[in-house]
Length: 259
Length: 281
Image (tube, rainbow over all chains, first blue to last red; front, side, top):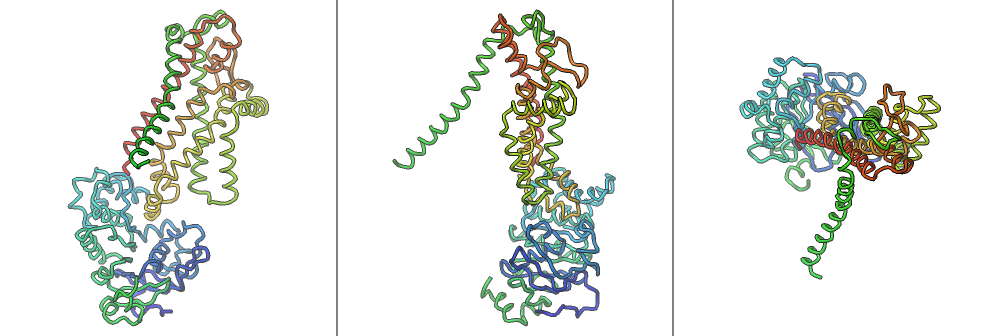
């Protein structure tokens, strides 16, 4: 087991302690203790079935929806326990999620971004319009869609849809954004646009990016965590992890020996 | 036999089956119209029957059938859709919900005359609604529930899980998710079940025979506690109980019944098409 990475003096935005998750009898996460720092971009890499997605879905409790799920250990957001101290709706508002395949809701571009704020009681048209514009700006999408706000979101390209999903999470003032292989369905150009958007967001947001593309983690993450079969093998600055990994298994994955 | 020949043969077989299915519908409608259209006059659809139902019109039966269809839907749609939402969105998969599902499927197989007796025992006698539109509409609604629930559940479960996860991950509550994402996208499918059942509510005879239908009541109903005439029971009465009634009057009554059901279906299908056009996935 890896010791919690607490070398940084700033308190963690999200901290997990001995986090384990079981699907029925199968353990998907094994005692993960990991600090995610304020406004960092943490990349998570690892082969299929290493628990990356489970880890993400635990952080905003979407995992609750899975039948037969069992969670032990702690997850804290700004020091508060997400299972006990924070109402689940508040948690999911503050910790947003972007899925592997872009999922625009079957409504207009505008309504997609306004969906979250509306559910949180913002009805004022002007306030909504401002919020939508702001969020689309922050997701680096505004210029491309400012004349298409009334079009169905399904008409956008894949890369635009994925940035729309990011904007949607921003519109509810998410502080942490979880991304589950957000570029897996995108071409290289769209991928680089999503990556640029993420780098821009780092200033005010904590980002956890699960990716299958090692190069992507190397390109944009501040630190990278390596998961293998439900275990956190190591987490370190991208410069170190990719050049001088501490663990033999990390080196093996990065060099492409498995995964 | 080579692949191309069997392909052609299969195609022909499937096409033939489809035509055979459509044929009876056309023949039934054709015969009803051919024999009945001569008796359709303004008087026939706008006045009450006279001379022991041998003359005059069928207005009270038309009005009664509309009352029953509307009344049945007032009970069946909210009950059915709400329980479908509960079963599909809230209830887990456990022994109880599996039993409930089984019960609903079995309810769909109960013969309609049994619903009639049930309505007589429960609504007419136990709740003392008497033979009334209220009792008849409730009886019909019980008969309609299984199909509405099953169709609604199907429609709800066809809404992609990913839509729910998006809504929840934006901090929406479960009900907000259902209200703003799931239901709007399930509506066309839910409407399909309702369309089927409006027609059945209008056309079934047995459930209303003991609970609401008047043999002959040449007035329009004033309240939900009144008896009323209805087209299917009226058709049954003039076909079996009243001698010397013209064949054309019977067919004309059947034609009006068909028309009422088809008109209601037509409007529901238009509504469904509008809703479907809004859907974009």
